[in-house]
Image (cartoon, rainbow, N blue to C red):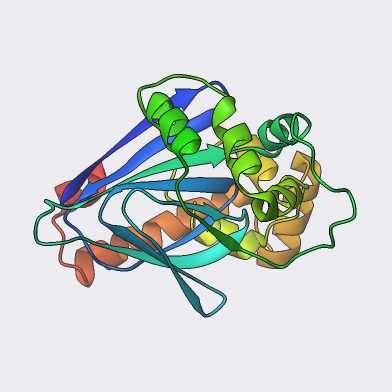
Length: 235
């Protein structure tokens, strides 16, 4: 990551991405295959989904629904050296296990909510600090649901399996070395369904399409972005 650092920590089924200790405020796009709980340690995170702009302030939390195409950028005050974000990537199975331990009304209707702003509570902040220190502790999500009744019903809905938009998923993941089986899981499909739907959309195999997309991107870096051949090769 330019102008910053990125690290990935895994605690059980929760992947903790210390995704920004950064001085880069440029806007980026994402299409995430899992629900993500964001915590801003410093600075502000601005997320645009469905034409709406949401802001996660310092020491606050935000919950982004899986399979949501979004744009985001980060800002910080003059007193801060940059912005630092922790993103907790939550699988459907993990959320379901947590939801089973917290009483949630069964009569809540479906929602199209893609982002939920969560103010800090003492219990949630305390447990989140433990997680940041590499502790695998399911009490963090239980604290979130207990602290916010509205969040609880929405959070349960976030755990329901959904079929991802395959084109958006591939456009945001072809540069990463993700096995096809894992891509299929992230798309909410079996491997056979993934291959069938992929060929119907692209009229090509996933492997050949990914290779061609990477070659196109390499060509762009060399001839438009004027990167050296060695830089492109390493990338």
